[in-house]
Every structure is written in C-alpha cells, then in structure tokens.
Length: 192
Length: 135
Image (cartoon, rainbow over the protein chains, first blue to last red):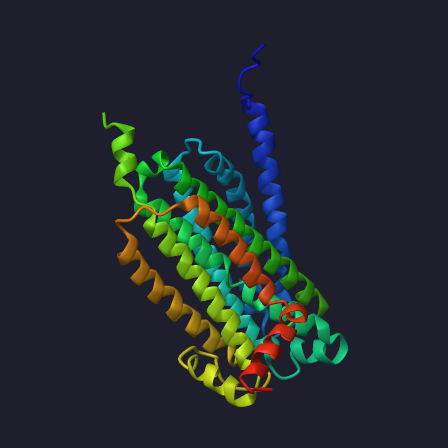
C-alpha cells in the first residue's frame, strides 16, 4: 500500500514556523548578550558570537539540503545555491570577526594569559587547534558556491559533481561545529 | 528539448578538482607554516613578515595583535587563490574521476586536521626539524 508523500497542512506549518522563530530568537540572545557584557571588547565579542551562531544555523539547515545532493536527486538549485552563498558570507564574517576578537584574546592580561597561567592545555591544544580549523568552513563553502554557480542548471546531469558539492557542505559544517564548540568552551572559560 | 546526454558531455569535472585541490594546498600551507613558526623566534619572524599588511597583525598591550597568525593566513591565501587559478585554467576542459578524488579529498582533510592537534603532530614536527638540524 502506498501512503503517499506526507504534506504538512496549514496548522502544522504554523507550529513548525513558530518553533523555528522562537528557537532562533532565543539562540541569538545567547551571543547577542555579549554586546552588553561589562568589557571594552563587547562589540567584537558580540559580532563574532552572532555571526558564528548564524553560520551554525544556516550550515545545519544546509546539511539537510545536502542529503538529496548525495543521493543524486533533483533539487531546487536556485534556492540551494542562494543559501550556500549566504552561508559562505556568514562564514567569512565569522572568520574576519574571529581574527578581530583573537587580537584581544592574545592581548595583555587577556584570556590567553589567564588560561596559560591556570589551565595551559586549553590554549596549547584546544585553541591552537580551533584557530586553524575555524578558517576551513569559509573556503569550503566558497568552493561549493563556486561549483553551483559555475555549472548552473546542467549540474543536475552530473551526479558525481552534485555529490561532491553535498560532501563539501557536510565537511564544511563539521569544521564549523568543531570550531564553534571549541570557541564556546574557551569563551566560557575566560571571556574577553 | 536538449538531450541530457549532450549536457553531460558538455560538463567537465576539472574545475571541481581544481577548486578542492587548492583548498588542500591552502590548509597544508596553514599547517606547515604554523609548525615552522613554532620552531624558533627567527622562523616566527619570517612567517610573521608576510602578514604585516593585515590590520592588527603587530602590537602589544591589552588590545593585542594576531601576531604570526597573520603571516600563516597570508601564505595560505596566496597558495589557495594562486593554485586555484592555475589548476582551473589547466583543467577546465578536462574530465577527471571524481569518485577517486572525493575519497582522497576527505581523507586528506582528516589528516590535515589531525596535523593541527599538537599532542599528535609535535613529535613528528620535531623529528622532521631534527633532520634539518633545527631544534
């Protein structure tokens, strides 16, 4: 027996969209609170936090869009590549603002000095790892964006290429998550 | 309507390999320049010099600076964009096997990532540096 494709009715769409809106707002409040922290670096910290969370949210959404690519199915390419482009720009913002806040991290009596004095391995191992893998998501996403725009619509005829794009999106998200989790741990350990 | 088979022949996978190979080279550059900069103060200064154009690459005090990280980023950017451009124009009309390349790409990324994990990479770096007489 074929049950047919499940299609959300009007009520479920309202529930799902409200849930997404509430979750996104509350999640954004976490890094947005940085803007009001009692430190001279609250602007830098806030921008980096907000761009990181947004990159995580869009990146995670894209991992779902990547699954049909892996399976070689037809996708709404116009919409997909626009989202991948947005993710690329968010990851670039995250990397640039990360460089910006990293200056204070290394500054006199900054988080690095404190961490080295108290729990050195959080700097020597975790931060030394995080500062580099956090640079990976932007160029990976840019490569995916480039591929989707370079080939255009005919890309759907080449499953091997769409599969590669799907894998690139998933890999980019993995590095994003690694950097994000490490960044959260460090910011929680010693704020700027 | 166009025959799908015609379209398939018109597409070449070369640009995909070019874009992703240049990423592997860029990430390797980050890793190698990072390990080199940790060996001695002189080597750190050499790497740092490439990054002086980045605002906030030098300086001290509470506001700090990103130090030689700027040089590692610059070197990686140069390798990334330079090699991407070269490979793209070399391979834009070529069809390369993505099946083999996908596997190589993912495994290489994993290896490079482990290269940034100091407890694992430091013994190897010190061994290689020892071969060149650098301690």
